[in-house]
Length: 147
Image 1: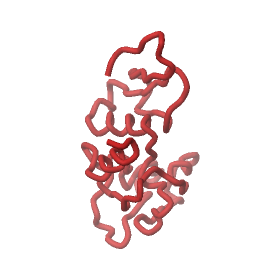
Image 2: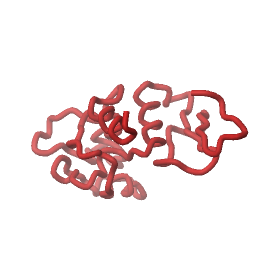
Image 3: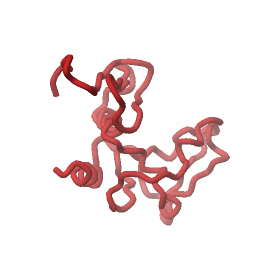
Image 4: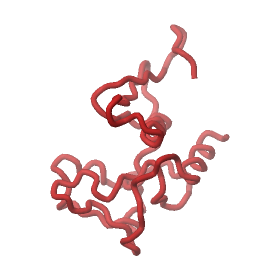
C-alpha cells in the first residue's frame, strides 16, 4: 500500500466512521472503507471489508446457499432481508465455505435472539466466527486476480 496520489483515478481511504462497512467492488474516485476504532479493528473484520472492496459478497447470499443454510426470515429485523437475498457471487466455482471470513454468524440481524441461519444437514456446524480468511477465501481471491 501507498498513500494516494493526485494522478490516482480510484483509491481506497480507510477511516474510522460509524461501523464496519464497504460497498462491494470498485467505485470511481475515493472509496471509503469504514473501520471504526471501536468494534472493527480485528484481523478478520479488516479482511472482510477489504474483500468487499475487491469484489466479494457475503457467503450466505450465494445462489446455492439453500443447500447449506436454512434461513429464518421471520427472525430478521425489518429492513435486513437484503443480507439474505440470493445473488450470483464471485465464488470462483468453489464449494460453500462455512469458515469464510465473509460468512455471517447464525444470529446475524436477529430481532428475537433466534438464529437467522442454521446449517444443513448438520445444524451443529460452527460458522460465522472466522478470525482470518479461510483457504477457500484465499483460493477465490487468487483465482479472481490471477495470483
